[in-house]
Image (cartoon, rainbow, N blue to C red; front, side):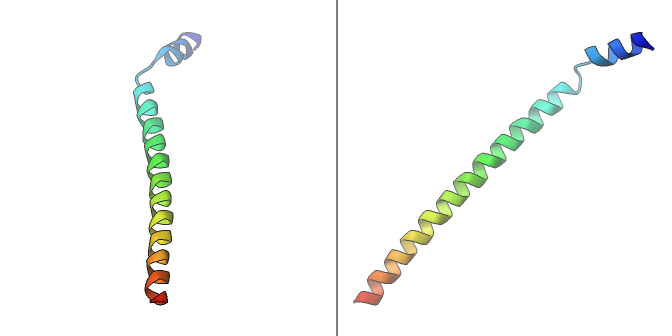
Length: 56
């Protein structure tokens, strides 16, 4: 029983999957942040264009 637990503890075959999952989470978080920032900037620019056109 203890030998099986030691082998399970030393097994690193699933480690790569966990690393890729963490990397994917980081990439998704960066993409969401960038997308939000882009959306905010586009909204601001569109508002400024609307205000400029409405003022003429």
